[in-house]
Each structure stands twice: as structure tokens, then as C-alpha cells.
Length: 222
Image 1 (tube, rainbow, N blue to C red):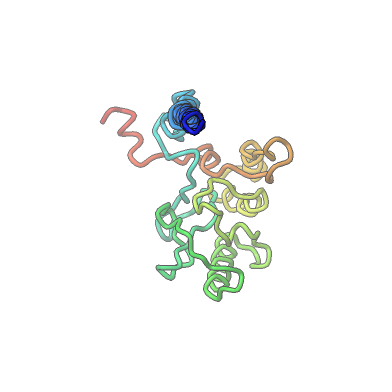
Image 2: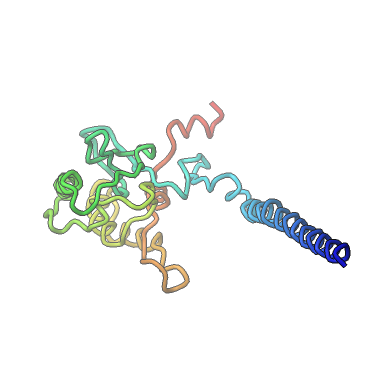
């Protein structure tokens, strides 16, 4: 009787261990092989996505990525014909701006009560107001604060509208034409109810003539 009970117990343990092993193998295949493979395959649909969503200009030169916002910079003292992204900023460098440097998109852990962040916001507001020839109080919130990633390629329609007169003046385009370009590069809410309307700045700047350095030489094979 004791032997039978022992045999039954061992049989139950072996059966449970076999089921557990089969579950382990099945989940390992699904989660460790099938799921990553499916994600990889979906990511490879279309050569553009497969190569990191490169953003190209009219000559076919790669200007950057559609997914990463890099603020275009012009030499000091020269006219500024482009739209600007949200600020990045680097608290470690004690610099309210870190223009054109995605590497500065690091978390600063500066909360609403931070005196450093408050000082940065005021500095940014003053600089942007001077650049756009508007009052500091008219600067939108997204113009003086960074996005969660720090390299968001989008800005609010309000910030784009604020920059439109300067861009029109510098490029020589009619302001209405610039606003039409902004409207053409404004994306609606995702699925109709998620997020907010946003303007794609990298693509908008390419439409305004932003190109890659030495693009003419690259296009001609020089």
C-alpha cells in the first residue's frame, strides 16, 4: 500500500514536471523567438522604416531622421529662415539651450519647484521673444519646455504660428504661403482622440529648403 502511494506520488510529480517543462519550452519559443521575430518583421515593412525613417531633401540627400528632432542652426548674425523645435537644454552644463544636439536630451529630474528649471524657462522665454519679435507672455508653453524624449520632432500649432511671420520675412515668402505649409505639415490627433494636433518641424523645414551640408556635391558625385 505504501509502495503504491509512493509510486502514485512520484508519477504525479513527473507528470507535473513534464507539463511545466512543456510550458517553459512553449513560452520560450513564443516570447523569446516568435514575438521578437514578428516585431522585427513588422519593423522591416518598407525600406524607409527599415533604414530608420531617413528624411531627404528635394535632391535626395539625407537631412536627418523623421523620428528625431534636431533644431536647425544658422551662423550667428545671419537671418534665420527655419522653424525651431522645442528646447532641449542641459542642466549639467548650466545651459538653458542645447541647440542642435540630440545628445543633450538627457533627463534632468528638475520638477515644478526647481529654481534651475524656473530660471531656464525665463531665459528661454526672453530669447524666443526677442527672436520672434513678440512679448514674452505670448510664448507658448511647449516653446520653453522640453518634451519627454527631448528630441520630439513636433511642436504645437501655436508655436508654429508664432514663428511664421519671421520665416516669411526671411525667406521672402508670403505669410499666407508659410501658414499653408504649416497647415500641410500639421498632424491631427491619433485615432481621432489621442494626443493633440502637432506640427512636424523637420519635414516642414525641408519644404522650406533645409538641405544636408554639401548636398550639391553629393548629388553630383563630387
